[in-house]
Image (cartoon, rainbow, N blue to C red; front, side, top):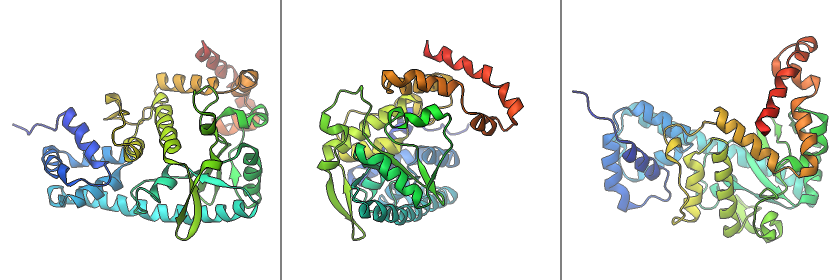
Length: 338
């Protein structure tokens, strides 16, 4: 008779222990027991990676001294994932230093958000907070200046879907279109939440309240703990609405407030990224519409349904004549608004 696989409740508990930081010795026995219940470590490693906690999992298993309880191939994958995260975070930090020099020389103060801020403070610069890009916050009045300034330094952005969107890009979301240079991506935020969220006015853009830190002897700024926690919770909930609930985002919240009541929904434990499902596509689209000021919504919707021809040709990988035939299909998006 085949051995019984770990139960859903125990799997969820195991994942929560694997993404915890710092390691607590009181959890060693429970962690050992739960690890022993896992029969398919290839599948387990895939799930850990999908949740963005492969570096934390390697750290916690190592701190607990339980490496021998895991098959060699799974142990190697976790270790390699941790090392890859460490190397990438080092690379991202060096790229950020270039941005920091440009903005500082221009007199633009910026605040590090999310992963970059946590990695170099609470996570101890050990590659434990996996990142793919950098997010910064600047004062609203400085956002366009900073965005254009970095483009003068070789950064580029994706093609605008419509010229109509370019005119209202400061109102479409919380950050300007991402910029990239040689594989490095940075998002310039001009606010921390959408205008409809009930929050302190100071939370809207708390650059003046930022806390100074040092990253490899380079001065940087991060949000005060209260603002940082509120921002991370809002960010987690926003992702959940769009069908994305990864444990790495929850780990950030619990690191700042271990008593937080925020938790991952059971539907996302086995499949953390469901943002391509229709119900989440609809929910995310509607949420995006709702944060746009009413006076700009019609402009945005028209630009979304009837994009520029250049964008259509790239999107559908075809010539102009064929792209015209796709326009009627895009009208179906209007139904989402009802």
